[in-house]
Image (cartoon, rainbow, N blue to C red):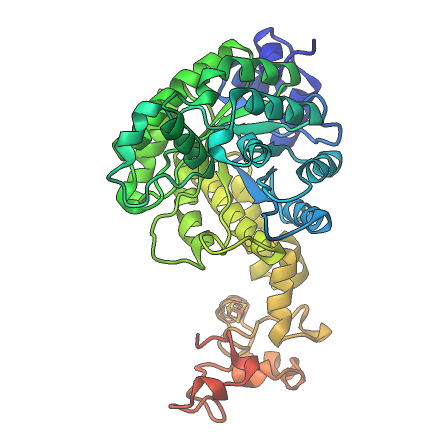
Length: 479
Ligand code: SF4
């Protein structure tokens, strides 16, 4: 039987996957092997996922970003899910979780595994519930059957909600938003109905044996993650975390790689505590966090509320960030939401890497800044986290070829471009010469963006209603 990455690492073997990861992370293969052997990192790489380009999740390596996709009972099909997978990989997801609960789950999953160069994760209890028809009709055998089938299909990691126990349920009664994890609420309902322990906990060793056979990485689900600031860091959350620490060590004993999932909704001042606690309780197993959202008041903008928390978590040692899209709490994300969520989280991950001084992380920022100061727009777009978005926004107001090397953009305009002014002060150029060589008449932006917008001749009139604002002016420097 093929070894898991953990088993190989503990035997002192550097696998092909470790070699590849070392190349991607620009570190010695031995550094990768040691991190895997110690449990401080995982390489989610099912033996059956042939299309995979291996990657690593661990606090000692670049912070990674996961994108959730998947259909629901009401929305989406194979073509749409394929498109979402493509968008997720295109916009920079390091892993993708298929959280589908709708039709054709096997067909979609197998299609994803055949195509995806990034690890694919699932939450098998969702499919088990679909098979059972009702959460209370679930059985341990059904759960094991679904886990085994998905492992055979080539799933690289699975969220297993084994840490929520029957004795935890009373701890949630005073919560503002109760149990917000989908898997957690299913397991809690089952335990309350049957008066028995969590079946995923009961058959945990059998799950580990299946995972060891296929080298599926276990992602220990945080069923009791807080769903609002009022419930953050409460007794229920930390009681489950203690169990997740025990389950981490049990999985390691089976040779299984482990990640641990984390909150949720946490105020900014408690995020460092959460990361430190997880690392201590789970012996350094990679922390895979959802956000956390740092405020509850911005539905429609929760990619931002959560990316703030994710950046702090990354700085404090979280290894992978599960993105949140603008549709969080509101609806199923579409392609545009995937793009916006991934941009927010890649920013958070990179900001964390810069803050922790990860070798090479700042080089990206410095290269873009140099291109920006040189007015090398092409290079600036190429280096941008989302090149298409950067070019699109620039060209909305300065679309012509004659602006590709312009020493200004429409935000401040030619006369007030601080970088141009600074450069001219350095080299003695004068504004009249610059203005003469620049064809402002080619763009309406030249009119609307001559600052201060709203005060110059022909600009916005005070008291004018929103409806009267020309579309070209939206997003200009007076916003
Ligand atoms: S016009 Fe303003 S925003 Fe645009 S390049 Fe110059 S300084 Fe930067």
